[in-house]
Length: 203
Figure (tube, rainbow, N blue to C red):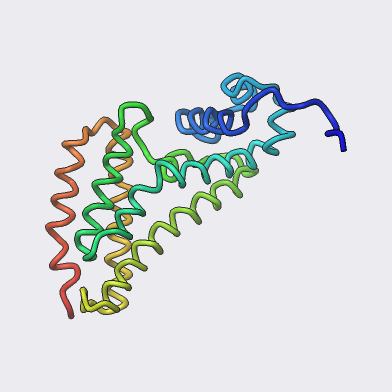
């Protein structure tokens, strides 16, 4: 059966990557459809046809971001044998990602969120859910460490520890955006890990 309509003259994967770069640089509210059309090299009508609305496109972009730049910190949590080593590796992987030479120096989950218009509330909630998932992922790793006997901390304390290190991750992003170097962030990570024994000691 013949394909209906005109064939695409662009690569959707490349276009999505170009959209990611623009959203990462300007944030959600700072990026217009015209900006996206220029960056992606396609007409706005083609954006709607292939990706949906600006919000739909942004959600696809964030899925790509999570699978690429967002993956190393999560992988660090999974791959290290102890909770302490996993948390430290996660913080270092985060610092590496947000100070890379070829990307803006901050995490999209934290600093690309819209702040004003009421109609952007679903996007704010979408990103808030992704940030809450960051906390849940860290807590799950700590809970697994407790199950394995690596930690003896109470469940309530584990939640607080997870929130603490989630806050450190978010703070690293803000520091990087404001000009902190990779070496500067390493000093923050050293301080954060110095608190580990106190934070995770059994009550």
